[in-house]
Length: 407
Ligand SMILES: CC(=O)SCCNC(=O)CCNC(=O)[C@H](O)C(C)(C)COP(=O)(O)OP(=O)(O)OC[C@H]1O[C@@H](n2cnc3c(N)ncnc32)[C@H](O)[C@@H]1OP(=O)(O)O
Image (cartoon, rainbow, N blue to C red; front, side, top):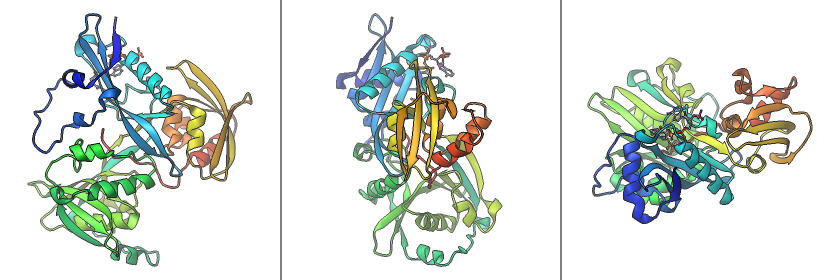
């Protein structure tokens, strides 16, 4: 018999020990300057699974984030994290019970989406989560890194209008936090990085205290509008942790800066969104090698009509979606009507256009995967000619979703 209960501040050590044991690891020793990932945990949003005699065997936690939706709405979402079950207690339904507990709690908070990063892609689909954004690395050898002049008139001037300054990460103050926050509000699929993450230096570089150089881009008025945090390895590889830019010209200016760095043989840009225009700016299209292409943010709809009406839409149309939610034992048939960028969503008994699992709705929700891809994969069923093309047109977004926050 397993009991699940929320933690208190007094349980933090037990929680941290248990989740590390589930991953076969030991907690790192705290060092000056912060940097422990678990310091960002919200202790009132952590769960412990305990045996009948009170031994902790499982952990689960949730962060309070905002997710930027297509169309720009900022939605409070729970970011599921720190899931672990001790090897001695696996495959007995502990994760299943913790996930059910979490979803009930998220709904009780009035939330209609939850998100996570998955350690393995085989775990969370059964709970209704679908991979919704992808990310990849772009590796460019410096001797082939020349950028082509933009062919559209005026674009070269946009990039030239700003300036780049190199700072040490430790000297950046609040600058990265401010620029990240501006960027994530305009980027569908991006998550907020709450202030406590920056203050506690919890996470991965450049949030963590790892030594880094930061190329800071400023606009013509001197206002910071982008940064690239990077380090250079002994073999001459310059690795960029993240390139944060409030527009494409800023991204290109930062890319140009790292690609033209002296004494560097190749540049690895981590977390470049799929289909990013930087590849098209390289004079040699084959110079940019995409690797490490992987799922990043997984999305779970907790309330289909509210989720569908919260995002913005680029095309008008009407679609009947028949959505199964096997984990929660729920089913709904929804008439989605989009007019002028806004959607209405009401129950209907009309014949469906598409039948799909809630996990697949999670995958198409942010616009990162076309419904037609999942029709072709055999996961979404289209009931009439034209339904797939209409669904593609409706779910498509102006800017593809991307997330690079690690949690
Ligand atoms: C968001 C995050 O925090 S990601 C981090 C996830 N944690 C880890 O990877 C740490 C190491 N692994 C673990 O701690 C555990 O194996 C967990 C948490 C992944 C699974 O916990 P368990 O209590 O064993 O899972 P539970 O018994 O509830 O299994 C539920 C279902 O998931 C399946 N499942 C569980 N783990 C896995 C896995 N790693 N791969 C594929 N299927 C899995 C089970 O077979 C079961 O399937 P069913 O629905 O067909 O019955």
